Length: 118
Image 1 (spheres, rainbow, N blue to C red):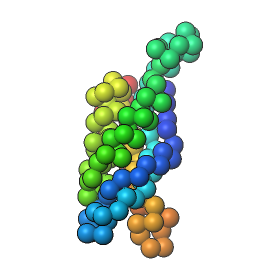
Image 2: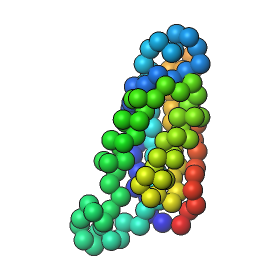
Image 3: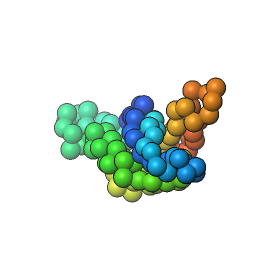
Image 4: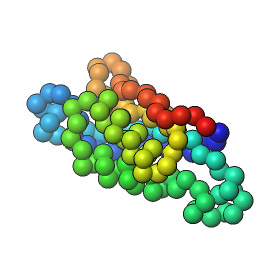
């Protein structure tokens, strides 16, 4: 199994359970690992034969910017569903963090794995 990844994708969104959080946009950070077989893309040197991480990133940015979830858990699940169903990825590991959400901590968040490892 090969892995195509995106690291530290920062996106502003409405996220949180408190009233003040519902009125502002906060930055979340996303790390994503996606199972892929890169051999065909490597052989042809063509994006059509590869997992297009730019397309994945643009889709997730648009989705996260438009979302208004309360929990990072919900946002993480929806992002993983997009990656698996829209891009045909059999397995992904997604880390979604909310920098500055807990005093004294750099960030807090969740790490999820979805799908089946090839």
